[in-house]
Image (cartoon, rainbow, N blue to C red; front, side, top):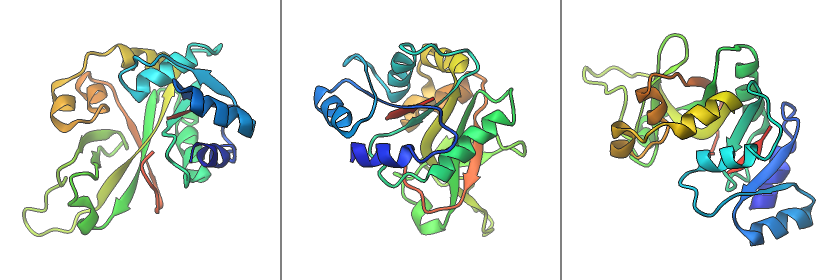
Length: 204
C-alpha cells in the first residue's frame, strides 16, 4: 500500500520532491527497495502533523515552502487533487494551511466517521464536525462537504501548528484541525470532485 501511494504521489505535477516519513524500518526497507526516499522520524510523536514537522526539519526548508501531508494508506490518491491543493496556496501568499473537501449526499454525511466541514464565503473553514452540519432544521437541502484528510502547510505555519496546545473542541470531536481554528488561524478549503478517500507521506 505504501509503495502504491508513493507511486500515485510521484504523478503530482506540483511537487518538487517526495519523501516517506516513518519510524518503522520495515516501511523504510520497502520504500528504499522501490526506489523511494525516506526520512526517519521518532517513534514518540503524537500526530501526523508532528511527524511531518520532524521530517521537514531534516530538509533545508524556507519559511514559505509548501509541504503536503498525505497518509500512507492512500493508494488511490488523485494527483489532480494534490495539485489543486498546492495551487490554492501558490495563488494566495497569505494562505498558510489548506485542505480539501468533496460534496456528498446525505446518507454518507450522516455517518459520524465522516467528517463534515462548513465554510465562510472566502472559502476558509468555519467548522469541522462529525455531526451533520449544517443541520436542515426547516427541511432545506443544503450542500454537504465531506472533509478529506489531505493537508498542505507553509513551513513557517507548520511549526506554529505543532506548537499549539491541544484545544477543547479538538478533544470533544477528535479532530486535530479544530486546534487551528480555536487558536484563531484559518484553513483554506479547496472543493474537488469525487470520488476521494481520506488522506502520512510528506511532499515538498
